[in-house]
Image 1 (cartoon, rainbow, N blue to C red):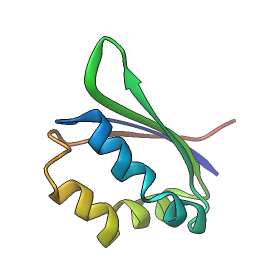
Image 2: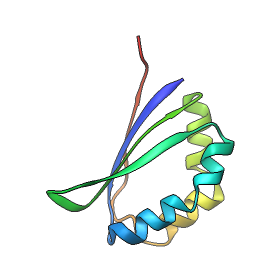
Image 3: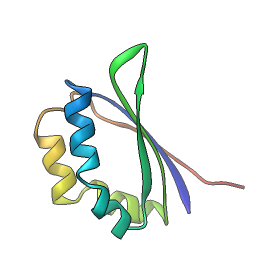
Image 4: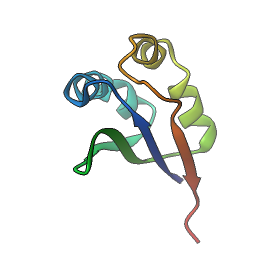
Length: 88
């Protein structure tokens, strides 16, 4: 499995977080376990820390129509910074 760390700027953290929560069933079905975090010093910075079975599974989820709808909504205002980590 892999660990994924994502951060991005959002226009409204609470709105973004409600959209993130709305995809929980799809994440679980894909074997992805992820939690959302807010940077207290930068309240419009969202971060997600999670695990996925593989990079390919995570990328497939990230490019899914439901996930793209969040991106297209305009609530995410910067390209995400995505880091994939493997445990050794």
